[in-house]
Length: 187
Image (cartoon, rainbow, N blue to C red; front, side, top):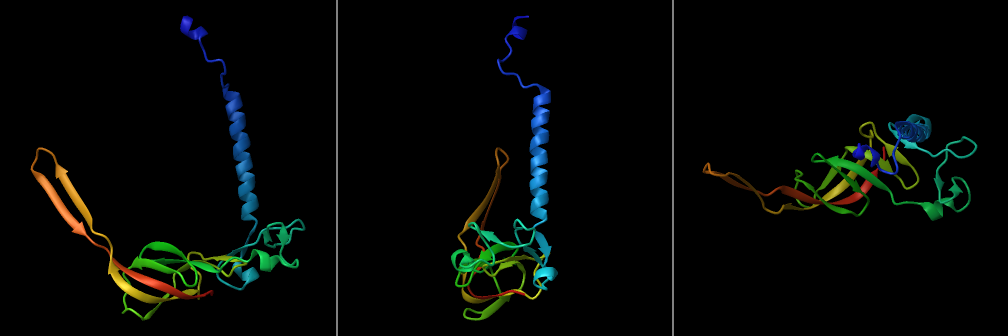
């Protein structure tokens, strides 16, 4: 009997928890719905093959809002322009690149000094709008130059089962290529 009287001072009734849960899930659903309405098909805006994000303004038209300025007003592009970038896939990994970047990727075929074309572009931005591919953007590519071929650090794979006399040791060095991005061509 004594342990029943020593309940914590604040007790969460199930009705209160359920009500808060409903409130949070309804709020999240509204946010998702308003975010989904901001996406337009690429064919409507740029004739492309991807999706373009445009934030809606108060009149219901699609425009991009940056730091309190609406697209079309004077000075908006000069103050709020971002660098152009692209998200490319190579070697099973995704990289966010912009012009002039140097990055290390999985081994690519070609000699040092030759140029390569990465055509699996997942997303591309020219600084004012973002085009997202489904899954890739048709016609978009990233032109890069191979700087050098190199090998990654040595990794040791070691296995052992105690008291059984079982030990295996194996080393590995990944083949890599360092590339420099020269240009981003949006589709």
